[in-house]
Image (cartoon, rainbow, N blue to C red):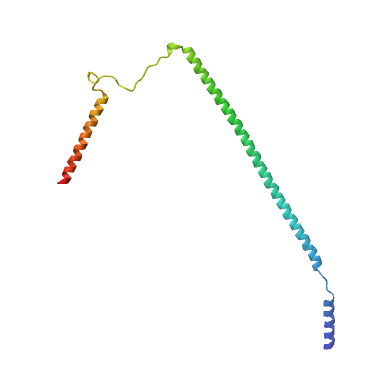
Length: 155
């Protein structure tokens, strides 16, 4: 009986090992399809991202172009308005000067020098003279102080 169990077990195992099904081909095809789908998905995502970036850059460029054109137009309008204001102001000033005539305009000469005599003197004691007198007194005081300190240090 032991031999028959052994023989039957051997036959069953032999049959099992002699007939094998290859699942790798089917799994390989499935894996290959999954990889292809993944690659296509990555390609589509990259293309979509590239298109999105391209559209964003185009929109930024268009926005900058529009802003530059608007700024240019605003500057031209402001410069034209300023020029018109200056011209109108100059025209009004010219009209006012023509209408005023010579009788409304007077000019007075202003001088920086005082030629009047001080204290009723004959002109020799003017501001220049007083300046030199003050400078001379300050010079004498400075020399006296230097002499005083020098003589104190010698003793």
